[in-house]
Length: 211
Image (cartoon, rainbow, N blue to C red; front, side, top):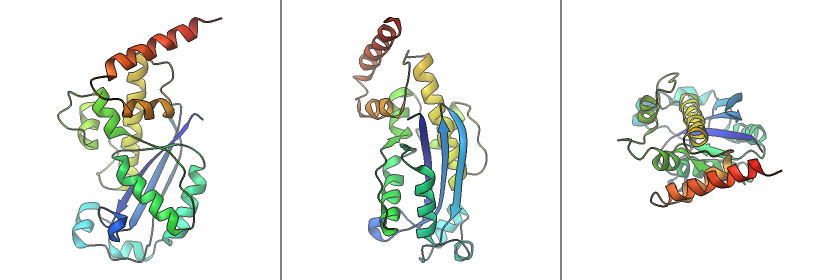
């Protein structure tokens, strides 16, 4: 599976366990580092958006009032993603909403999530901040709009993921830093990572030389 779905939610708060709901979803579908498709929608979950959230995201109660119902949006999003594995910046947050909103729609959420925060901490430990905007600026990646809208953040996370995969290939000799590899990398401790990457590069080189 070469496709990866990079996702971002805007929400009414920090946790669906506290009754918070999603207000917007965006998904960027990557295949071998290239954007091949996009999905984006506001969603009406029937809950009030606090004023401070509107100030942060620009998403108002009036905007979601005319948006499709959340269950409909999530059903479409699940069809869009299919069985592609997923990536998000601070994946624990987006995974919670992906699972919670799909559960409310009566759908399963089997996708594994890799996290560009954890991956960037492994690859760029010298960065003073691992927030998405700070990493995008430090790595000179494209920024397509104001942060805290789902598609802008999903696009930036996709660009960051592509850069991470590029650096794994070029700087660390990893032949195929696919989603499964990224999951293993983020689980590796920072102290063990250099030795682990070196062993992986050697294994990849030997595999390439094998008849």
